Amino acid sequence: MKSPLKNPLKGPKRHLIALAAALGVVAGAGAGYLVQAGREPKLPTLVQPPLPQAHGPQPEPLTESRDRKVRNDGDLRELLLEKPGGATTPDWVEPQGWMDYAATFEDPEAADTFLAEQEFLRAAVTGWEAGDQDVQIWLAQFEQKKNFAAPADDSAETRYWAESDPDVESRPIPGTGEGRAYVHPKLYHESGVAPYYRAEAHASRGDLSVHIWVYDDDPVPWRTIMDLAERQMEGL
Image (cartoon, rainbow, N blue to C red; front, side):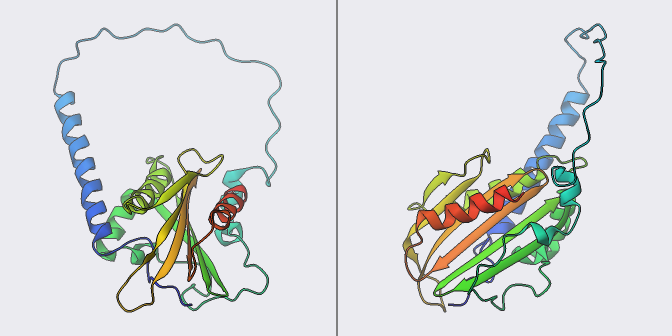
């Protein structure tokens, strides 16, 4: 079974709507800031005495295996789950494991500008086919020099679209804060392909957002999507 969606992240016009909403929030926040900046302050300045500085031996530096920043700055593809034995790599997975993240949006040109504002850095992808089941996993990395919330926002957007299905069922992914896994219990009908079942998981950790999709001819069990999500997050 080939991947039923060229881009499982969106349906028609979804990212255009999300992009417009995001830009509207930014514009509104900017306008609010300008209004506040022009007002006279009404509260007295808070004064706090200097805090005592800690003394004593400094903690040992983290080893490379424990330092997330060092690990993430390496080959991002190595953080992706490995393809299970017996599974095959489908043609919709990029041969080198890198992906054009902007191309997954409905309007790639507008997405380039939006992702630049989000401090998007790079994205890696893996996937496999095992019987009638397809799996696809994306890791998107953000620089977080100014926009520290970008990975969480990226995960929140995909969770929003997952939850737009009125029949979807969801569960939290342990240890991920807002991360959640979703199972769509009803067959999904799309023009040009046979109906299929789907499940997905979206979370963030540090400077990475994680997106996982599973497609199958049969209903996707909870243990399948939760196991993938938990193992992928543990690897981060």
